[in-house]
Length: 357
Image 1 (tube, helix red, strand yellow):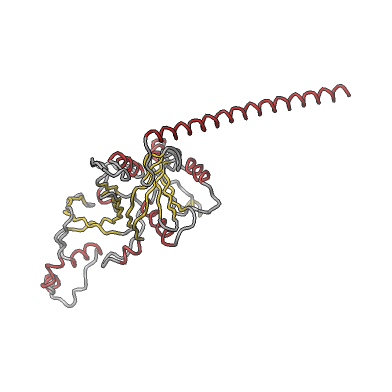
Image 2 (image 1 turned 90 degrees about the vertical axis):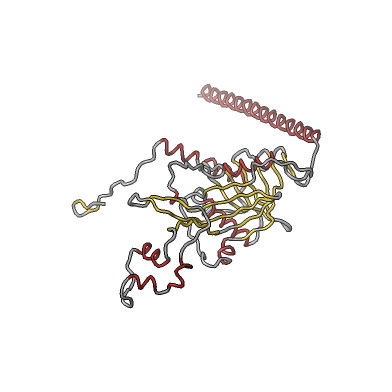
C-alpha cells in the first residue's frame, strides 16, 4: 500500500474471480461433515479429524445442534454449493457413517468396525509426531473397487454394489490434472482399500527428500546456513567425524523416486516417504438407498428381500407419491378459490361504501 500525501492508499492486489473460476468453484465437490444424536467424545474427535482430511473443501467450524433439522442442512448445502454430506451416528452397540450426495441421494451407510483418531496414530509413531493442516486437497488412491467377484452369501454385497461405493467415493474428491500439477505441491494422500468385505481408510502425509545425501548435508541445505566449524580443521573433517554413522545416515527409501525441477530449473532425484497421520477407519457396507436417507433400498446386509417384495414396495411408494401430488393440487385449488372469494368480498364492501357516500 503506497503512501500518498501522508496517508496510505489501498490498492487491489488480488485478481477478481472470472466466470470460469466461478464455474470451477461450483464443480469442485464440497462436503458437510457432522454428527447426529448423542455420540461419545471419541466420535466427536473423529468428526474433527475427518474434517482435516477433507480440508479445504469443507466447513471446519460447522455449528451443530440437535434442534437443527436435515432440511436446514440441505438448504444451506444448496446455497453454498455443497455436493456431499458425511454424517456420523452412534447407538448403544455400533457406530455408523453415511456418505450422501446432495440433495437427492444416493445414501451409503457403513458400520464402523474399528477406528483410531489422529492423536492415537501419531503417538504410535517414533519420529513423525505432529501434523499441521495443509491447504490442498488430498490425492485419492483406490484399491479393489473395480474387481469382479461372485459372492454366494446373499447378505454380502456384489461387485456392482462395490462399484457404486467406489463411484461415490470418487465423486467426493476433486479431479487432478496430472500434466499441469507439480508433484511437490501434493502434500497428502487418502487411501480407500476394499478387501475381504471390508473398506480400509488411511490418511498419509507426503514428504520429499533428496536421495543419497548425508543427514548433515541435508540439514545444511534446508537451513541455508553454514554449521559451526570451529572444532574442525576443514569441512571434510566435519563429515568424516562420525564415519561409522555415515552409512546409516544415508536415506534409503523403498518408495518411488522422482525427478523434480527446483527453483533453478535443475532436475533432482527425490525420494518419497509416506507418514500416516490419521484418522484410521475400518468399515463394512451396511445399506444403500436411492434417495436422501430414504427411498428404495438397493442393498441391505440384514434384511434380504425378493424381487416381488421390492416391486410391491415400489408400487406402494408410487401410490403415496401420487396421493401427495393430488393433495397438493387440491390445496392449491382451494387457495385459489379462497383468494377469489376474498377479492369479491372486498370489492362488494368498497362498492357499498361508495354508495353510502
